Image (tube, rainbow, N blue to C red; front, side, top):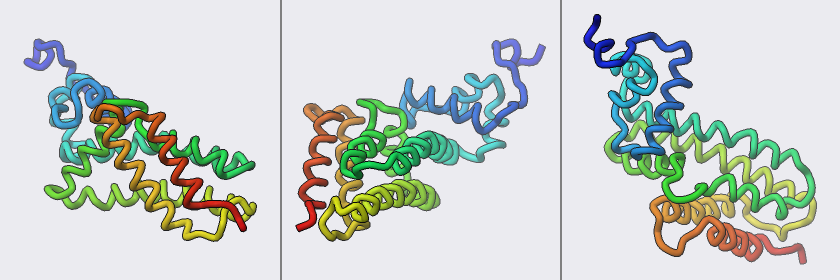
Length: 205
């Protein structure tokens, strides 16, 4: 019997390497956090070897970045549904903000964001993917706001600039929510964001 099998680990090729590893990575991040997630732990969870995991992804940074991309892909249908829903853009904006914000403290998606931001200085190649993911949120938010502008809901405004400022606000709130800063809540952050939106966008006339 092989040593890995003796230890209860079945070394096998993965049928869906990307999805299986990323699902396992998200589970491990939820349990341990990104910094403590190891290649050995990932390999154990998917029943393969650490060498196979590295073969598919190359490095832990790449796994974390691909896990972040995978988790962000899950929000694309929700944003598309908001854009297609019709009706008041201002009434749909809270749902957009809720998609953006963490579910609560230790939300694994936002733990990933905070960790990857922190790794960018050491691994600048991470920056391009982060910018790509940010741009997807920016484009959809601007598209939603443009629907409201065409419908006469908002006073003339720099909508791309508003998107940049609102998302910067949400990034700050999200970081505080996910690390558990006392008094910073998802509900309170949503209320602050919407207060800002109403003041900044205003009404025609």
